[in-house]
Image (cartoon, rainbow, N blue to C red):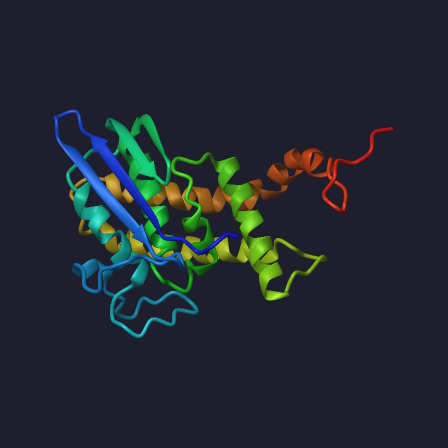
Length: 235
């Protein structure tokens, strides 16, 4: 039997100047950040700039609070700087060489999804099965799959427009990315955090446009299985 499990993801980034920036993200069995920040810098405060549907009772944005340690950790680092990054989680380690903005984007995506923000809630299950440095196509397919599983679990799957909620969730994600980006502009000395957030926003925008083509590419493989889960007969 599968049981709910916690997740620990460790990002270690080796910078050209010899420093190593390490970020450890811990998720509980519900896919929420353990020991999530409850206070943060001024740019995390909501003020009158709440996203539509925000239910937060505190004065700070949960998604912004979640990424605030990441923003500080990579402050002063050029977003285009090539770095070596190692990600350790569960029983494997992945190592890549990429611009630092891609690393920041990956950490932000994980922490925002697990922040407890109601706008980010549709992506919480993806955080439990986090895939660092996923391609756009991988992300689109995973998001679509988890959305369908979520609707199945709630008994709300609509065969007429099965992906409508996912497109709406991506639109809301664009809204929160824009609001946090505006708040960060006056705070950041360099653009690593801003470009990391911009990468997330690009995924949200491109995901909405790329969903149909990505599903079309996957459809032949899906059609190889019949309704009882066995390979379809060949003529």
